Length: 377
Image (cartoon, rainbow, N blue to C red):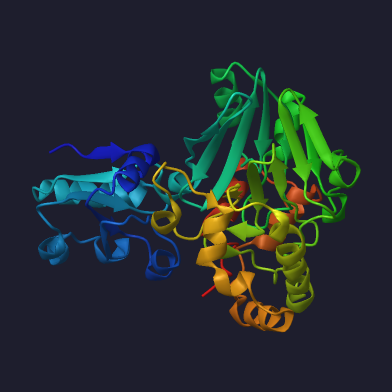
């Protein structure tokens, strides 16, 4: 029986379709517990590859015959061998092409919004919990919080008959490497970032560009600005209809303010953001964050991750109606001690102080998103 290879795209489709799938993950136990392919109707068995070198006989009674079976490892080599062993035992098993590295890098595109002025697409990096966006108006495109896969956005803009003219990052990301600077170099688009985030390369500072206009788009950078997750975090209000909230507001909570080891000080900034800036925005505005924590819990009926601000306020009523002291205490208690893996090196690369080749970037980004951790009760 031939062993099949499934791409990350095919596995993503099974997640979206809520298919039944049995995953045999042959990475070590710590890696599996830290980060795995998640699906609402997925079932798992974790057996490290070294325990299967002499054969899969001991686990055959744990492999279902009525579900599709996918074998997963870090890079694909071990999963090919295990899938082949299962095949020899008469089990129709596939392996994940490229392993968890490929899973970490896959983007899928979903339409979020369209009116006479703009079209908006969301790019979901389902293996990392990262979200980025393309706003198209006539023949120009704005990219929000791009991942490092520049060609994906360039091709998407070409499909819309547009060129990338503006690129914005809501903050200096800590869990993944931004594609903003590379995209600007490749496309000639203008790249915007807060000066206070400390990048050492050339860019347009938001401190000098509180509004960006092109075609039928008005992008408003919220005040000075929306700190909390980092001191230079900003949110983008587009045409008074869409709030690209970066890591300030999530569908199910607020951004973590503890990565700079100033949790109470930054939590105070986050409180001011929520109560002095976000409070002025209408309930029907669609909030589109830079990360999510729970794919199945946060994806909506339209197939993208986002919600109206009114619904988010209701869902997180405790955080949106707290006294300053209660807010600070709750944030301080819930701020996680588990920070994004390799976050200090990733920040250095995003700042332009350090460089890394493709393989190193892959290694640095392996693992789950840990920016969307502060959720209201």
